[in-house]
Length: 420
Image (cartoon, rainbow, N blue to C red; front, side, top):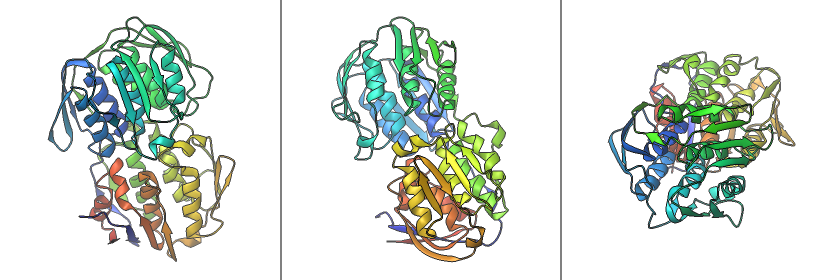
């Protein structure tokens, strides 16, 4: 069956109430899949996310000799020798940033050349800082454009020592190096070249997962970590629900005055995007300034509901959104201005949302381009809960991280019209 070209929601005009089961965390699932593959033995990952991003990681690991079974919709059984074999073909990872960055480092443990590649969008996402950092560990790799494809000349092992990395564009570079480091021939120190790091909380998430699989990681300052050469031990892991996915439902609850039970209180999340809950709860009196560097994936959610806030909101610290699945700053500005010209504007890498609660209940016929970005689609669904006649293009792109998103909205009673 072909994917629908657009979806138009009917504003429910009532509080959204109900209970939903969130998908598992993409960030934790992809870390756990890789760590289980690098550990000898059998690991069981429950509550895991099954989506395009995690499927890409699982397929790549399978191509390198890891056995992965999926007995149900939320479980991975991972059986590994602890060693990655040379794949017969390039690893194609679509637009999965976590899988691409993490595997670019991990395939240094393969004995032979491995090509890590992605789709047209992934080929625009920078990876040179990671490649330059790997060179300091004796790993030869080349990236002619500074983006995928990357050819890694693996030697089957990685030496110890210190590696400096510029994580200004992505904390995933740090996470990739840390996960590789536990398989070093000797201890490895990972150090930042500067103080700035995008979404530091995801590094903490990486370290927690590594420790769960037996690694010894010590923070030796704000930008320095020492990883012992312990390797990993197979184990079981219950994956936390996805906090980024939760932001859409927290927002749907807030803007409709509803109550949606997600089975996992906001304060119990360890993922950094959960920090957005307090700002969502403040709607329609969100703060005038939101610094978003440590909750980047939640910014689309916050920006769209800010369009209906009582006062303007400026988002700062979000330059990294320019190099996500799409230029999210530009996509948000473009989409909001389709709903009402002047609703959003860009100042450098800041995004300023004017805020116009009078839009609620209006008909504002508009088509929202998603740029093949799941977060743009799901965040603009929130506008569709308040404003009539908003058509969101390419709704199937939510399959990247939340395949059941539109179904879940309908379970809450939201009417959705799909158009072919």
